[in-house]
Length: 484
Ligand SMILES: [Zn+2]
Image 1 (cartoon, rainbow, N blue to C red):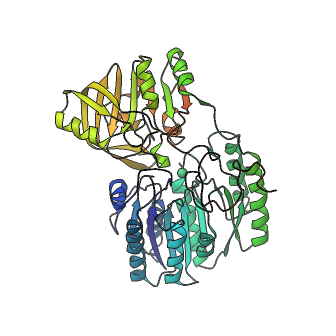
Image 2: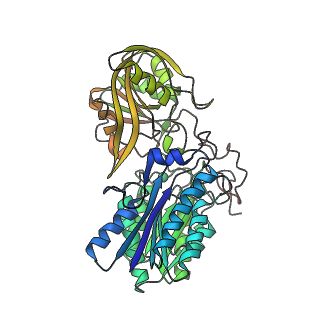
Image 3: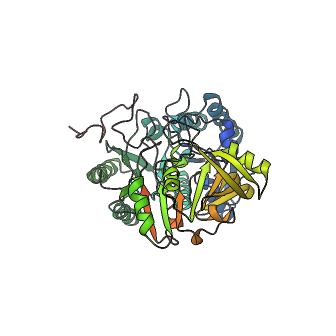
C-alpha cells in the first residue's frame, strides 16, 4: 500500500496588513521531500505519524511530499499559494498510483482569488487520485469547513484541544483511520452541522473542557469514528466562517447527522460563556502592583498566532508609565531593531526605536536608551513536541524592564522563549507575553497568577464590528437568533 503525505498550512487573518508570501513559509517552516525533521510541527504531524506506521509495517510504502507552514498573517499571495500547491500536486502525480493521501492542513488559509485554499487543494488531489483513494487531513479547529472540502476528502479530523497540544494524537488517529479505510475495514462517512456562531473556545476552561471530555467518551464508546469541533476563525472573511460540528461514522450517515446536530446545538448553547475573565490594561496593571510571585500578563489580541504583527506596544507603554520594575517582555517583533542591536553588539548602549510599526491600532513605537544585553542567532522556543523558530533575537534592557525583540513573528508558547535569551522567567515579577491561550500549559506551572489582558487591538476580536463582506449566512453574535 502506498501512502502519500504532505502539509500546506497557514492561518489567514484577512483583516491583517501583514501579507503572506513564499518567504513567510521559508522563514517559518519549509521541508521538501526527505528533509522533514524527526520532530513534528503542529500541521505536519501526519507525516511523522505516517513514518511511525511505516516503520511498524514494512508493506507500507511511504512517499513524503513537501511540508510548509507560515506563521499566521494576512492574505496569501496568489502566486505563492499556487507555487506551493502545484509543488505538492506534482509530487503526488509522480507518486501515483497511491491508495492513501494524508495531509496536514490548517483550514483557514485564504489566498488572493482563493477563499477556500484547502478545498481547492483537496479537490485537485481528488482529480489526480480518483474516487477510490482515501484522502484524509488534520485541521486546526480555527478553520473554515466548506462543502468542497467535505465533498473532496474522506476523513477530516481537527485538533480537539485549544491549546492544540493533541496534534500528534490526532495525526496518529487520522493515519490509523485512513489505513483502515483503504483496507476496506471501515467506510468513513462525514456528517456536518453548521452551528451558526463564532466565538473563542478555549478547552482548558469550562464549559468547553467538559464538552470535549464528553466527545472523547462518545468516541471511546464507538458512537462515531471521530468527532471534531470546528471552532471557526473570526478573522477570516470567507463565506463559511463559523463553528461547525463534524462527525465521522462507519457508513451511518443518518446517525452521524443526528449526533452532529445534537452536539452542535449543545455548542450553540455555550456561546458567549466560554472565555475566562479578560481585564483592561489599567485593571491588569493595578493588580500587578499588588500581587506577589510571578504574574503572567497575556496580551490576548496582539497574538501573531492570530495573524497580527505582534509588535504592539499598548500594554508596554502603560507598564513604563506606571514605572513597574522586574518586567520581562517576550516578545516584540521588530526585525529592523534586531538588526540595529546586532550591529551595535552585546553590551552596547543605544538609542533605539522599537515596536508599534506595523499598523495604526497596535500602539506607537517606543523610544528608549537601551542596553543590548544579549544577542541570539536563530533562537527557538518549544511548543509541546515541536520547536518554533523566533529568528535572530536581541534582549534589551531599560528602566528595570527587559524586552526580547524577535525577527520571526511568533506567539509566546512557552517559557523556553525567555531561556533562549538567557532570561530566567522565574526571577521576574511580571512576564508580559503575546498569546490568546496557547501559552497556558507552558506558563501555568511557573505563574502565581495569570491575567488575560484585553487591549482592544489589533486583532479583530469583535465579530459585530468586523466588516465581513463574504459571510454567506447569519451567525451569532452578528445576528442574535441565527436559526430563526
Ligand atoms: Zn488554532
